[in-house]
Length: 182
Image (tube, rainbow, N blue to C red):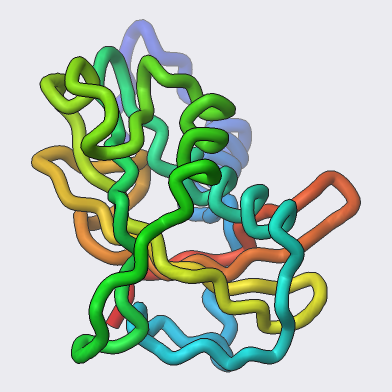
């Protein structure tokens, strides 16, 4: 080991600090991707559970917060949902729902594409949501496609489609796992 005059060498304390820091760094806020959940963004809905509109809004709100832009960037929410299969035509996102989401997320950082010209002129990226697949009364799956020139979230490895597994808890819906779509 090299002894540095300004950094005191304490082998036991340094080893503990190293282990704590590497453990915190490598640990993900979300858990591992469960083996039984589909990462296919175009996977057909299982239809197991129909979620209430309030639950769907809360789920969309949570996954859109994952893409919170930095600085003066914006996120444009696409008017169309992702198709269920590559052969399907796109279904429109409910405009009233989109307006409520933009209002809750903050209209300076989010906009519903095609509705706010000043938002469309800013730097940022687009977000296209899928329909929400209710897996159980307290679990759901949703995909989001991000298109833009910048990495969208700390720790995210790519721009593209991300599939989220959501779970309802007493405090509301949270992201349990997410992974790039296959």
